[in-house]
Every structure is written in structure tokens, then in C-alpha cells.
Length: 260
Image (cartoon, rainbow, N blue to C red):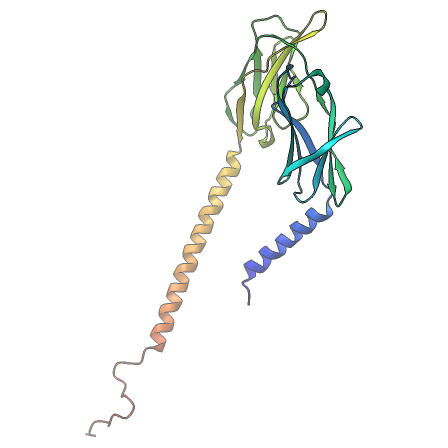
């Protein structure tokens, strides 16, 4: 008979698989690295789905470009030596058995001349914060600018920095705010002019409450395991002592001593 814990674990796995099968898939699309691309530059369009046994097709507007090479639940389309012809709106379709099950949001790809110097991105209070903290990103440049965008790799939307203060405040951060950030600035003259993309920085958001709970759970599990090992050892010793014959018992076939 299988142990109860194995049966329960198998049942939970079956439920998770059935939920994953019944739920409709979603597709995300983003640029890596994010930002406006200079002519001759390169970038990668990434499409991700929770499922890994279908296929992806990339569209530019209503024009189908190609089926994407897939690695697990991710597919990529590289743009190298970019030209103005690469500008436009892209989106991904996810298919299984030739049937489209999900479509991504639209991703705008911009190819523009880079005329402004690279800004510098910094973060306060630091690169590692706890859940619930307030974080401030600052994008600084030596040139007069109109505005800057904050990018988070893996996200399709950019955040606009405050024009008055030149920073972007992120309140009550959560685990999902962790990631690689960069910024890019622009100015309005006869036309919009762009800077190069800034340095990247990694923000790590740690849930210390969760970490402590995991440590306590691991400690409790270790104590339980030690208790089970001790109980099993005691049970084994008890079984051996009951099976061992008494030292003064007469062996079968041995004559008894004389009666007094």
C-alpha cells in the first residue's frame, strides 16, 4: 500500500495538471533589451506562454511574419542591423494543433536616431529592499531633456518619470517588482530626439517574512524527521529484544538436571 503522503501529493499534482489544462493560456510579449533602437542596432522580440507544447507565430500589424523557434515556453525573434522598415506594431499568437488559443498585447517597436548621451540610472535606498518598502528611481543626464522612460525587462509598458523631479517613485514594492531596470530620455525640438539607453541595474525585493516562515517550516520538518527516525529505531530494538531467546531457557533436546 502506498504511503498516505504519496497519495496526497499525487492527487495534488493531478489537480494542478487539470487546472493548467482547463485554463486558457496567456501570452506575453516584450523587447530584450527594451527601448528605442538606433538604426543598425539590434534587439529581440520575446514571446512567452505558460504552456510549452504548442507553437508561436509572430505578426507585424496584420501581416504574418514567421513561426518562431521555440525553447520550452519561450520563443524569440531577433532584429539585427535594424532599419526604419522594422518600425511597427508586433504581436504573437499561440497555437496548438493549428488552432489559435491566445494572442499577446501589441508591442510597439521604434527605430530612431540616437542623438543624446546615455543617462545614468540609480535607485534609492538601494538595490536590495524588503517587501512593502518605497523605492525611488532617478534617471540623470547632463542635457536638458523633456522626459525619461523607465523600463523593466520583461514588461511591455514603460513608466514615465516625473518631469518636475526627474524621478519615479515605486511605493510598497512586491516580489513582482524585482528585475532589471533601465531608462531612456528624450527631448522635443523640431522632432523628438532620443538618448541611448542607460546602464541597467537589478532590483531585488525580498520577503523576509516568507523567508522566516520557510526556515521555521524546514526546522519543523527536520525535527519531525528526527522524531520519526528515533521512533523507528526504538521500534526496531523492541522487535529484536522480543525475538531473542531467554539466556536460561533449556534448549530443545537437552536433558533436564537432576531433581532435588
